[in-house]
Length: 159
Image 1 (cartoon, rainbow, N blue to C red):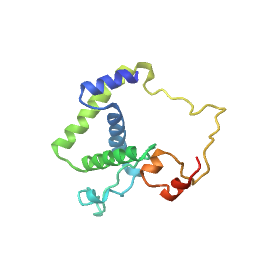
Image 2: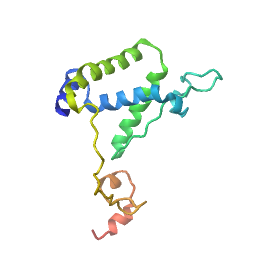
Image 3: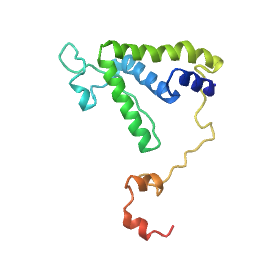
Image 4: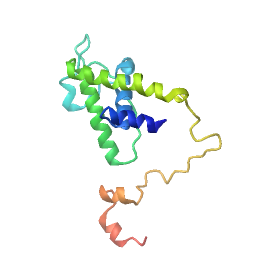
């Protein structure tokens, strides 16, 4: 099913992962606003809509899982874009939001068939999370690239 969705995204000039994240963030920014936050990215705070008290209007916040720094930066840029679009009433923002919504609801959801809204138990009943020691930075290429491990340690390491 996902392969078909990736094809739909590509034919629309998009990437599946960006459509998925953007659609989720844009919808929750609106739907979750009554439970949301006023923690706007600093560069967008001046553009935020205001409520009846003059305070920035609430936006639905999301928790996103990322596995590396590049994903974090990509997700942060997308969030800033969504928050910016959510607060601007201009035609370009509305068209972008509507375009993504049409791709998802009119093309992708029908393609999913019985898999739409399907869920499964994460990990299964016998699953036990075997995490590394809490607070310990793993010694890997990501940690090295981002300077999370002192060079002196790497030079003297016997690994």
